[in-house]
Image (cartoon, rainbow, N blue to C red):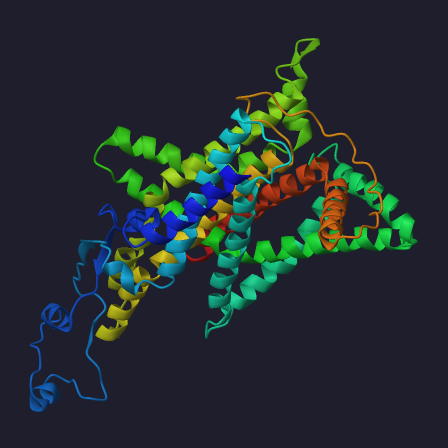
Length: 483
């Protein structure tokens, strides 16, 4: 375990020391490829409205501008916004920029440590060593949920209160959807959760019978399912606005791709955007057994069936497909972020089609607010990608799957019941025996079969939440918002 500890400490040290100088998250926003729209000044608004900038109080009264009445201009003025590339200095004013930078950089380092540990286990084949890559991935999953909660809490603090109602409505809807998903048989949704729970129950029953607590077994199983349903509802509420935002930026990014001068480049970009948007749908389908595993393992060829691949090969293909879809989502990040920044120009175009007057402060505030929340939009876009990727990595390692680059590890034999610790005269030996007993008990309860079911279900559930919210977002932005 010494090699893994050294790599872990080295990664943590590099992440802390290099963050101010070299950051992938900061490069993603501030590499000069994204440009923001700058709000007009009061002088520009006065010039567009045919007014002179009032200098004295008398001039302000003549031009209809007093201390109690701010500058107002007609909505149909010919306002054109200037653009400027986003720099590192500009990013200092962004809401949640530090949280965004730390989270994305931690996910990058976590993935790097995981890749190293996978190579280390492939080459060295260490036994009885704790996989530090799994620890990094677990921390990334926890931090992803924390980031979602932080952004959702921001919506709950909104003065209007509409966002709060939307989150609560979707939380209740996903609560019902999670209960439905858990009662569907394994013949249709092949998570492996029921076999995993059965293995945990059988192993836990042997331990509880020794202490006379076997009556708590049904309560523990019910508590686990209720906790899993509550977690699914919470994740659904957290992924509501990321899904709605993804639908909006997807539509805007398609408009931007259609306006590209090079038709071929625009077509390629449009295809990639469509594939990235449909990525959660593909993840959903890969766990629907009749149209995925059964079709590939027993493909109909006339009157006969042909097996195209084995079970282990299908599991490997599913892992690589999810990783590839996550990389595709990451590749089109700039298109989505630029589409979000383009909301400022679209808002100005919408304003010019309206009648009446508007204050200059409201124009400046609206355009500035769109830019200041680009870090929040980045978290909403990258958060589900990071969560899906690291749940998949945990599914591979804790579920004892294989990448196909080296043989799949054989299934572990069922753990034998832990023997009671023997009395020892030395405290050090007592502590060592207690640690071994606890480790043996936990290893016997939480088997790879259980982790396969748990992380397969979580990976599928994150994709299901994205599908539901993004499809609702498409309907909302195309029909409801337009009307």
